[in-house]
Image (cartoon, rainbow, N blue to C red):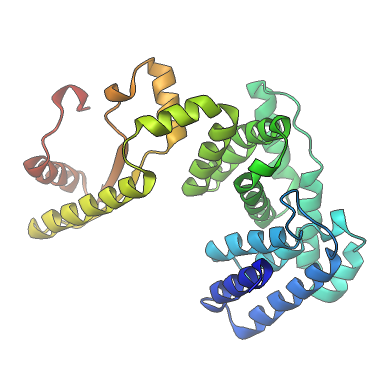
Length: 296
């Protein structure tokens, strides 16, 4: 099975899990059209260019986006990088999808030249204003995410420019849209290319890998849910390991060492009332001893 075949299979499996057959057929049609349009084009990785739109569509399908968004993700580069016109897209896929593709194309042409905070904020507002539908932003975030994941194939100068732009523009946008996990991935991947030595040093200092930390978090969540059940408390609990960039910022701000950072893992508890919040805190402290000087 080729790389392309494997990507198509993954995309189809994803969309079939939540979209009707008619939508899946439209996605297949969009793939066939995009593959033909990008035929003969290659990425810097030497892979056929169609692998990029497919990866973008897979990311969108993992977010369980609507069919129009996924189709536009597959087609997002055909107007900019091939001879396809918007009129052709309207005829084949409808005005909404054609507008989404056109919107992404316009965003691709934006240039961010200043790092002054006020100007960066203006760029973010301009970015949002140019996207007439928030789904265009979603497609662009998926596009940027895959480009970041494959940034190793770009020249070093380009790597740093893309990473800086991602930290300044795309990570805050993901945060505004409530896409926390995407924001964290943007930040960690950008951190890796902007400050490679600091990234590696911090990565080496943290003994547990991210997967191990995630497994530890899941175990603690399970334990705490058991405690709350026994105490007949209705509490919504979630947890996550802190990502590397947030740890780096904390170390840099406090000018401290990794040994002085206590919150490499984070948990959030939501209860119905203030009384239940304090009751839940007491239940947790009955098993896990608080560090008094760190308790707020």
